[in-house]
Image (tube, rainbow over all chains, first blue to last red; front, side):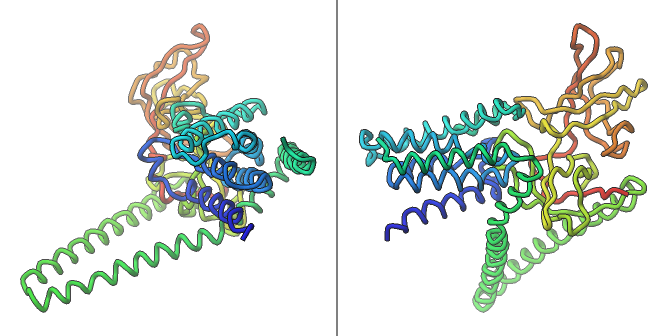
Length: 138
Length: 272
């Protein structure tokens, strides 16, 4: 059953990306869509192998970008950096504590969109940076 | 910290990403369409889910029959309420279709054919303003076709076309700039640009002449200076205007007439 957890994580990522595109309730409520991929990446980096983390970054990033106006692949490296960061220090974290998990999720939800934005701006794209973008970090 | 195979694997992922990021736009567009086809079964599941929900809702209706046996008066009341709701919904739908048909007959730009499309997906990232519709190249759509709201207000243009669906880039996105004209005595021309940081329904109209005499409430429509958009499509109304570039030009904030957050159906103008 070694493959069950990675499959679950990748399936969850696929559904999360679809949910973000297809359902707009939170966007109407908060004014911005919530990105679930960083949270899934936190879970993967705390519980799964490095292969799963890399696959999640690659596939999750490509799936997200395929439904978005982002250049294809721009989300992959920020997700990978975030996942590797947590993976490399996971033995030092109190990863069984809900509070620690929540704080890690919060950090990931801020860092990943920020890195994507920096990458977009570095590549000469002009994303809309406003309060809606800040809302992405919530 | 990591073993050698790990470094090789991570290096491969980074290398693959860098290669994808540096591919020509046409190739990445094709790759995007191919990857997004993974979600096609989910579209099917979502629509089946709606059908199942509808069937469940229908199955709940016979509860009125049970009430009928016990309380005739309550049953009558319930049936009447149900009928009223149903007729109300039908009336709303009828009115909406009449409006759409009436708009198609009267207000569609002359010489342009229109196709009605349904919005199927929205942009998951918050820094772009795009959505996906259920018409594609099989329906005759190509890039840069203008897209209008059901009421006939400009919404954006087609930015990518797949076989069965297309991406629409909305007004207010950096990639959707529209030559427009303020409908006053000066007929000042400008360009509709990105939306402001606070309110996405407000867009900037720049490159206006300094003596344009722009006042709040004046209508803004597409100008004749565009190879993409036919002239005269309403865009919105001026909210305020200010002088920029040391008085060499002015810029206006325009409130969009179409509510971009609640679009369900759209008109696509097919190139004549």
